[in-house]
Length: 159
Image (cartoon, rainbow, N blue to C red; front, side, top):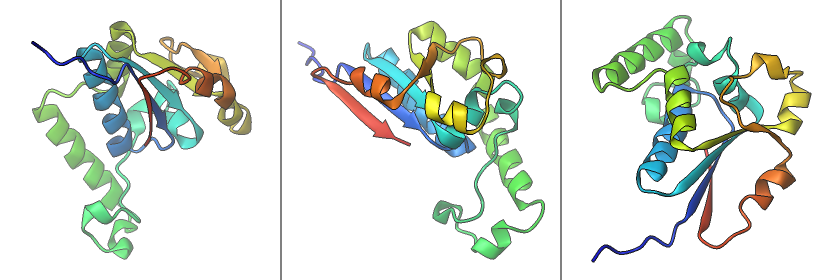
């Protein structure tokens, strides 16, 4: 007999739109949906770039200040290093049939994953609703988002 999961809902807070953070959130949210667990992503601060139509295809790998890159910070800041690292990451993801960001957002939405923009960040960065993806479920205050977490079996994960 299969053990029933105590996790019923996963809420992800995405604060940075680097490729590694965006895909981490998307893969975990998608994995939750595949396991029958509700999932939602709250895009705040620089995470908003992942849901802006004009920016989502130009996301980059963070090469400066990223200890996982295993390169000195000075090298990460040399012109072209970030573009090279981004190109290599996208190439490896393509080999694994990872969908591009826009397609992945559509997959998430179609699976029932809720996608929310942070009202404070929208206002702070002067982002217009028309600049956001069509699959967005809405714009929430942090209080509205937290109220969605107010039930047993809900976990929040900050990325």
